[in-house]
Image (cartoon, rainbow, N blue to C red; front, side):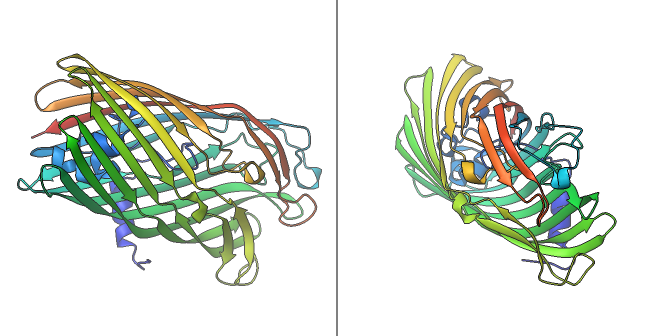
Length: 424
């Protein structure tokens, strides 16, 4: 949905202008929606309901939070992804590539999020979440061999999520919310127009979705959480610019995937708690994404397809297992592992998203500083499978983007998160 004055988009941008989605995740979905779940590799988050961040993972979990609670986290995410040329990668027309393999394409991402939960009465809760559910960023050294396909890319979404939860009885709670989402896409690369020059794509959109959740208390020690976040279609509009040639208004459409999560939490004894989950993500909604001009310009007539991003994503799943050990009355140790399947197929891997399957190892802790204040922290290392690439985008024919063939060896991600939660 479009608004000529972009009031909603401006409000979101002002509220969250500091957010950066420049990270690599499975696909470009971000799990880092709190710090309290990082130590468990985000296992069982739809059932954990430790604090107000449950608004994102399962809004029904608010019914476990008495009174009012505010929670905020900072997530520092550092991916590493280095390309190795197999010897057949070339720039259009044999142009030199002084930066060679492009260095480390990963860059530090700073992803904050914040949540407020408010109990109105014994049955009803209201909440508000602010998060970055999707984000991607790669940046290669200037002049690398694949610069005609991508030099720098950023995809960022910012989501405002007003929510409500209702306690049907002691066994069952339900919840839901509205997602008000801004999406921004920026891609810089070189263009070949007889000579090498710079080009860029910039697009944005504001759109809406929703999330639903339910919590089932099977016993005082065991509960199950179910959570669904809807797909959101973005009709993006913006500008394509080629230096020395001109600019054109452009548009494209893409549906971000919906997710379905099942989680369980089980308190074995006063010291040990186990968490587990499986999450399904319908990435197959994203196949071909064409960039189309909407008016005549120096780049061509209206309706011209300037480029097509052939993602051809496949549906994925994520499995996580976590454990909490209460070492002291005011300190809990957290551990977790997870396996995260990538939506990217080998045949359609690109330098914009050199993604592959990954395994999480995580550790963290929760410290009850005072009756009202809780501090969470966590660290995770993500092992990403080596990823081969064979992306032929034309050397002597349109779109003149060269042929990138090689391998991304030993890619990985390091994450550090901290969070403060205050109850009042």
